Each structure stands twice: as C-alpha cells, then as structure tokens.
Length: 90
Ligand SMILES: [Zn+2]
Image (cartoon, rainbow, N blue to C red; front, side):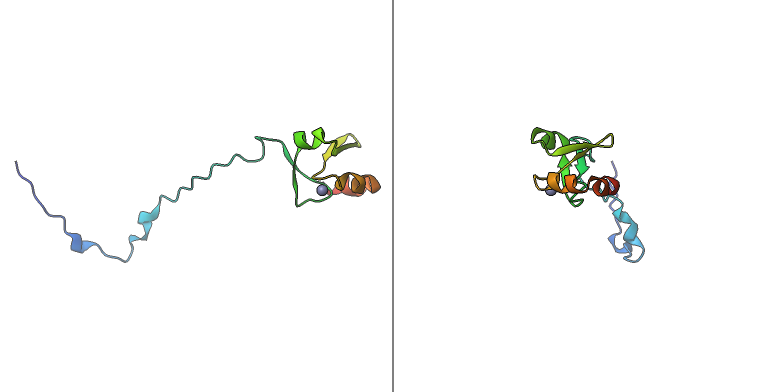
C-alpha cells in the first residue's frame, strides 16, 4: 500500500481565493408575516399589530368595508376622528 504525501501546501496562493466563501448561510428562518396575522397600525404605521390581539381588546374598526386594527388604545379615537385619512394611508 502506497501512501503518497504530496500536499503541496505552498501552492496556496492568496490572490484569487476569495470564492471559497460561498457558504453564507444565515440561520434566521423567521417566518414572514403570516404565522400570526400582523398588520400595520393605520394610525401609527411604524407599529405592527397582531389582529387577534387587537380584536381581543376592541382595538379595531370596520370602516368602508375594511377592518383596521390598532396598536394601542390611543389609536382607536384617533382613527375615529378622521377615519378616511387613516384608511387611505393603510
Ligand atoms: Zn397605537
């Protein structure tokens, strides 16, 4: 049995070896919006609202055939004050 040992480590040029980097896998497999029903609060668009959560608290309105959910108790009255504006923004 012959065991040749010719690894030639010295031939490892450093230029051009940048493509040995293909395994950029991130293990963040967060489900997109869909696991829970997340919508954007029409009054405070920077906030996401879990629709089930909001409905439990009465933080929603049906306006013009569409339901809107709010991120907090403050948003309900704000929406009521000018529903068309927020409905359009949503
Ligand atoms: Zn809010």
